[in-house]
Amino acid sequence: MQKTRLQDLDPNLPYIQAVNRYLDDAIEEAPILETTTQLRDKLENIAQQINRFLEFQGKVKQLANEEEKPQRIDITLDDLKLIQEVLPINNNLF
Image (cartoon, rainbow, N blue to C red; front, side):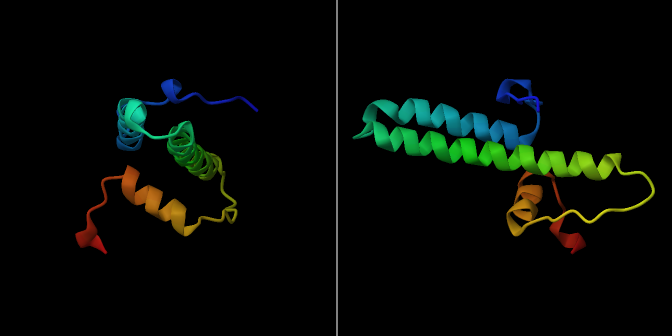
């Protein structure tokens, strides 16, 4: 399985822009944190968010590549929240 790097993703995606801002904030705040554990926790949280995005992106690609026979793909509530963050959804439609 090929690893995906953050810099290889489309920087115009709102989610990737947000992740980049979180990383910039973590770097800026690093000198004022009391322990290295706090920085590690921040970066671990960002890494988890990136991994969730990549997992969801894989699910979307899998759906897009399905031929005529549909297959069930489990999407979690976190996936739906991620969709809402990434896609400009007009809430008036729901």
